[in-house]
Amino acid sequence: MEVTFIGHAGLFIETRHGSVLCDPWFNPAYFASWFPFPSNEGVDLGRIGNPDYLYLSHLHHDHYDPQFLREHVSKDATVLLPDFPLDTMERELRGLGFTRFIRTKNAEPVEMNGLTFTIMAMVAPTDGPLGDSSLIVDDGQTRIYDQNDARPIDLETLVSLGPFDAHFLQFSGAIWYPMVYRLPDRAKQALGRKKRDNGMARALRYVESVGASVVIPSAGPPCFLDDGLFEFNDFDGDSANVFPDQTVFIEYMRENGHDNARLMIPGSIVEIETDSCRIQHPIAEDEVQAIFTEKRGYLEAYKARKQPLIDDVKATWPVGQVDITKSLKEWFEPLIQQADMACLGVGQRILIDCGTQAVVLDFQKRTVYAWDGQDCDYRFYMQPGIVESCIERHVEDWINDLFLSCRFEAERKGPFNEYVYNFFKCLSPERVQYAEGYYAELAPDQQLFECDGYRVQKRCPHLKADLTRFAEVEDGVLTCTLHGWQFELESGRCLTSDDAHLYTERIEERVEVGAAPAVK
Image 1 (tube, rainbow, N blue to C red):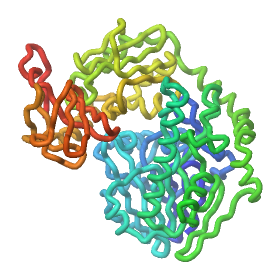
Image 2: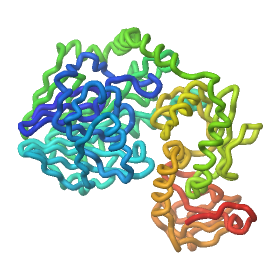
Image 3: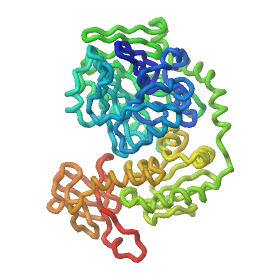
Image 4: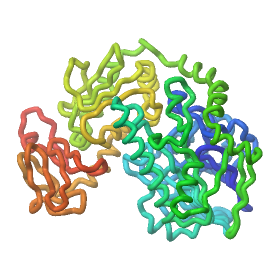
């Protein structure tokens, strides 16, 4: 089996039974803020444009490049579809002209003319744009795992599908946090170090669990070439930068006792066999190393080449052509009014401040209105042009467009609230209902108890302690005394961890005249 690395998460897999093109990304993404690093301008597009199979892990635009797929990939390719509940990916690809599809089932192998494909699908609202996936390819002699930037949780099943000869995975950040937050420099640096360390540690845990013979860091980092974003790049191994490059992770693996990582750049070809791995780069080894050791100069030259393209993209942003307040009220308010679980999860006001117009998304009153000085727990300061662009194009997932662009600033009170960002992924009735259904399945039906004016789930999200026995409440904060975890009763937010949430509902909301009914 031969695998050509085509940049970021992109792979072109060639086997004796056919070829697979995975996650090709060539055009700038997210309002021209993200570019592939290293550059994949030299990849032979004709060589990869006629695959037997096409696999897209998810619809984030650094994996799903519609312009490239439309212009350069044969529509005779058979598309391998992950087992996502919504058919958004199939609709997108049919719109580009693809007609042949294989609908896989989660973690179930599919045999096709000598090749076996297995796709691990993740379907939580937090996974990608309402879904993410990873791919196993087996040609009868060699088996590889393309994890890209998915985060599978069923490791037992994953390991049972091995052993693996090669493992391609993300190790670097793909996020706007903490760079866009208005924080003191020292606080931002501390959060950046934590984010960087956690990202590489998580990747290492996957490496150790999967146990492949060879590990190839991929799926990031992107690079930022526009003015105002350029310093987001990690030029000097900055421990507070969330975008470490491939060489940093390879060294991290060595420091932790693993010497089986290999470096590839766009155009590199790896020949993988059960007991060997040979890599051929498209340029000399010293030139490969210079990309990383002389990164600032490399990116400055890259920036100069791409600046006209960036300028052309920015010139398309409408400014002053859209009534932002009126448009968001007409669009978002009906969605908020049907999002019972999201309203409970957010439980606060969100401000979108575009300078000349500022809009409040009020998840308490379930309405949208012009800001008049109200206190808001989340504040986003956004360029009007990109907000107007999202409105004009009716973008149903602002995470996969505006937020990942990093072209905004933010403030918040308290810890991260995943319900806030999940709402911005669900800007259509179909998406809202999907997320609401997912939350409802997790809601503790008939497992609520009354506590300080609220109905609260009976089991602590941490280690499932019985809160009827171990809960104490003071000043609106519930403490599970078994392990000390704390939750805000009004919103259910966990005050001791970013990734937990307590289901709560105010009892009087059921009897207030005109109040929307609480839903379990």
